[in-house]
Length: 356
Image 1 (cartoon, one colour):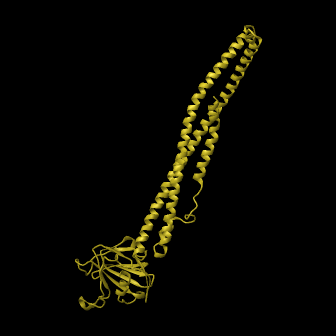
Image 2 (tube, rainbow, N blue to C red; image 1 turned 60 degrees about the horizontal axis):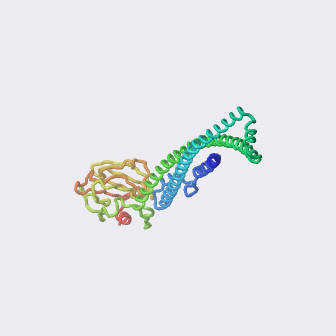
Image 3 (spheres, rainbow, N blue to C red; image 1 turned 180 degrees about the vertical axis):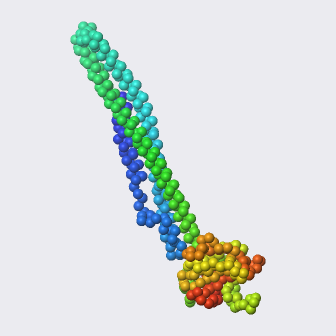
């Protein structure tokens, strides 16, 4: 009896401590590199200078994801402990109810006998005893039995009350823990989506900046990228070479596979698109350096390279082709450089610095 009652009366306090611990684990905001920084900050990081910031955001989100998983696991463990304790209380309830029933029945039987026989019990004990000492002991025993029964009833009633309170409390707290678990799952799902997006963004930036090169030579100052992936194109200096109709070549032909990705030579704004019998599908990029770069013979222009759009050095702007006055057997981009938007100059040294 005493063990069951003790367990029942102490359970609510143990559960309160358990839930308080879990609540603290859940509600405390993790302090770390994400404080004051949103993962979206990576979206604007598209240069060599900003790659470190994008990777720091990914690292911070990864750390927060790991912390969220840890909080989830601890909450789940708390839920399991609560359920185990609830099962223990249920078993204690059954045992205590049996004890209460037995104790109550015994007291009721003694009460009925006492009512029916009144104080004769003690006199009978005296008369039946051969010695006075034995008679006194019998009377004391009857009184002790009655006191024990009263104590048993009081303990049983207290135990029933404690169990009722414990049951109600543990059910509420289990519901709260389940709600916390669901909230953690929802938060983790959002965090995972943010981490996935930030990771993809960082990967794109990493790929983008791998195409970029800081160049400081003459008029070519800043960050530039080869118009194709390095090593997949070929070109030579053909500036001024004769062309049909008495023309002279005013650019550099950069050869690559058909529909190979074509990239922005430097950061700037798409000035205009063009389409002609000579140049085919063309694109004009006004760079932040003040120069205009012309791409001809494209197979297509990427949707992101619309007129007025801002692009970063190394960002996709189109696909290699042979539109206009170009041979199907030799897809290439005719690339021109117009300093300040004026007359064309030989772009070969600029391309060589970015591509070789």
